[in-house]
Image: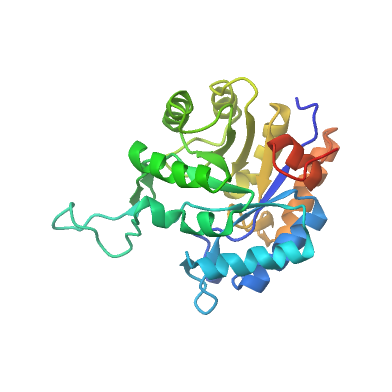
Length: 296
């Protein structure tokens, strides 16, 4: 079980949850920033951020939307660790008649375009997906070459990459990237459990994945949907950190929609405290991650 303090990350809106599924999903930059600040008050030391078109609620990659969210958070909380996504731009849907041709819904972008906002805004942390996998009926593609191109921009921006791991092959790719100097080891890792056709949300999966990591690695895990809170407990028991938020799950309990991300963070905090854990504040999280502002 964990002996150090536990970092809670809150992923406040994500890319896939639709506004029709819950009226509480933050959409506008003001709503997203406010949810991040409230999550911090509830115990989150890091926030993971996607942005959306304010009018439609659909996923967006507009740099100015990211910039507004980050500026608003910084005005309210200087120490909260800000983690921006680079995941959008990797989805491919083949055409029925010619699978070489992209069908509507494909989001593939040049690697540098997927990290443009990272180079311009320079958050503390950004996600770096290593998965090429079936995702629902579609395919997500992150080839080793393209991951290297994204990693180069992230390094030049002075931003810490958070390696998002959907299956064991992703770990092997990351270990190769550490070995060849593309990424710095032992790295910051996050296990994504419960995406269909990826890692199953089970104790066995988590133990297996953890045991593949380099010595000294910083790792977190999260479960999708109803497995969100069981994985909070399981990650802590195995010495890891945790993530919750409306990106991953919109329910506080069966049939009860969470009215805010802060509610989800508070429930995770209560689970950790009930197990005997301690919650890291943003300054302590910065020290754990080797980020500026993490002094004792």
